[in-house]
Image: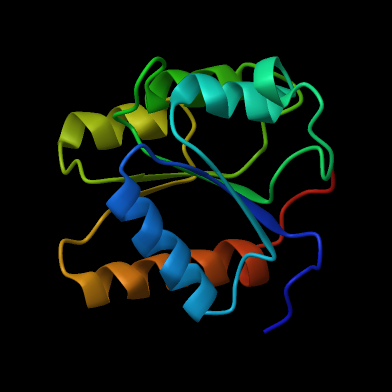
Length: 148
């Protein structure tokens, strides 16, 4: 598996248990050279646009992929997604909705707003770990995004 040394993931997750499971799963699969975590939608926007507390952020302009929860404090995930798709700098940034929601309307709204994928967080730990590792492999090693 060949992963670009600059490949990175932005995880937008407010549930600390899910965050730990995701981090552990990606590390176990030897993925994510860099994995940054923010805990709400406003932090995600600030991180991606280098504003607010992230105004001095260094490193790659954008991550390789964003793993985005829907139900977030301050700014919900669907609004984050909509703002990303409406900005030329982030319009093509891969965004995977990773959520505990199994609501058809959430899935529909996610795709309507431009999600690249909608993945329900499995309840079973082993399945959860396998799902996250598969996401990492696909978005960091298999997928070929356009040049930015």
